[in-house]
Image (cartoon, rainbow over all chains, first blue to last red; front, side, top):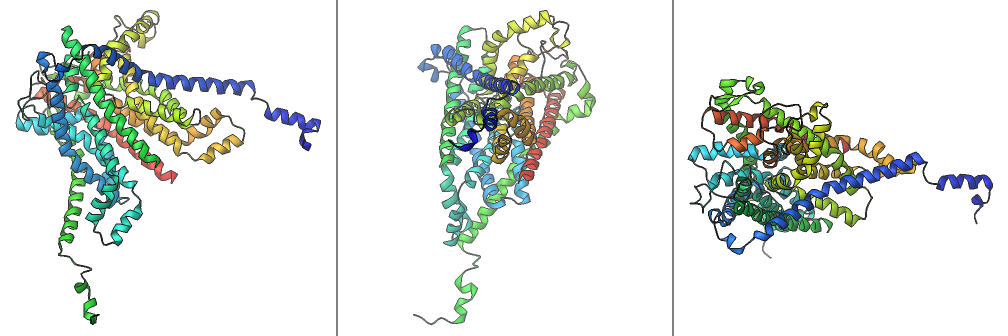
Length: 293
Length: 324
């Protein structure tokens, strides 16, 4: 036994030091713990409730032939095709611009004032309300072509995807060690060769997940589509005609008194939620693994 | 070995500063491409402001700034005023931010401090982030068919027992109202704020925690006296970014707010927001003053969210610079 425990005075001090907190502080600790856990539980309830309700209400009506029939025949085939069309147009427009903007931010600008400005504007762009993006696409495309079209919808989605792709690309490129760039430059690689053959190639998996996240986000957008791509009950007549999409289908028909249409809304939700959640789940898991390495 | 004359080491002969080879032009073209595309990305924001302004111009010229405090919205007679929509947007977002701030700070603390096993922590953070991925229209669908039936009884109880409080004084309380919209918005902006607050808390140096603990502070004393003050500006900017989200949120709000253009002090009365009226009326609006008025509303929304976002980003940058 060591000396400090033998003395009576020291024993009292030791017992005071290892005794629990005074009641006031102890109660405060337990109270705050309980509050924090209660709030956290409250925060995740909606997610489980949404997933559970959508599955339980939507699954009963899900039939394979719905995928090949149009809304007018109680299917959602045309909406799936429409969503793929507008998201594809959005991707074609936004991926190159977003990718090169990301390259500019990570490889060219870095901390220069111009890059700071570009980064600032692009991050502000992520905060623009999607309905305002809809007005933008309406003014630029719908008014010019004088009709609602998949092109206008795709343009609106591209505006939403662009900043997401640019910022995730920048983050992905920043993770590549500077040594790899130096090695490439030392071997006589030009900027183009260094960027494309070394840096972008190495960062390709995380760039892809960033693009997938942007695609998932765009596939779930409703507001910018309701007055750009509009909607159609039947198969779309082409890129320059009104085009259906899954989110707009849900929005347009959720109040429909017809029970069959109502069921269609829930089954459509299952497809949309499944699509969006699985893409973001997979891509988030993927980036998480990357970060640990 | 051949004999090399000094001339062979001349720059031009070695090709070190060669500026007409294929690689040179490839490089130069690549550089231009990168700059051009970055410029396009920046131009999008300015072009958007300009286009929305142009579309709103008929209404701006007709109504001027009086549009902002006009209270009538009469499509047939082309009289348009924005106040009920501005009021609805601001109040619903305010409810959302009041509700979401304590909850998301709690989530950020639980997922950043060592309350739980790390694997449960990351799982929790992950689940909360997943809420952000759910399409707005599906949250609206859930709100109107599942959440409102849950909310309606307590709201009716509030309306019948607390009539003397103006915010609960409603003649015919129905589920679709300002308070419901605020709660749904709170659910939607929670992941944004929780994720950013979590990053802010994780960035606070470990030494600050250790120092407080060494002085005998409990975990919650450390949180309240050290961590939250240290992360205050970061958490404020997280709340502002979340507020920007809430102001512009369209689909879920349109489905649950009741869409009634009135200014009522009671939170249990139906209301209307700027994004909701755009979603409802834009596709069927007649070109001219009606579209112009809707675009004017869009312009106001754009300006407000832009202001909130820019302030939040500047705060984030300022905090980052100070911490460095």
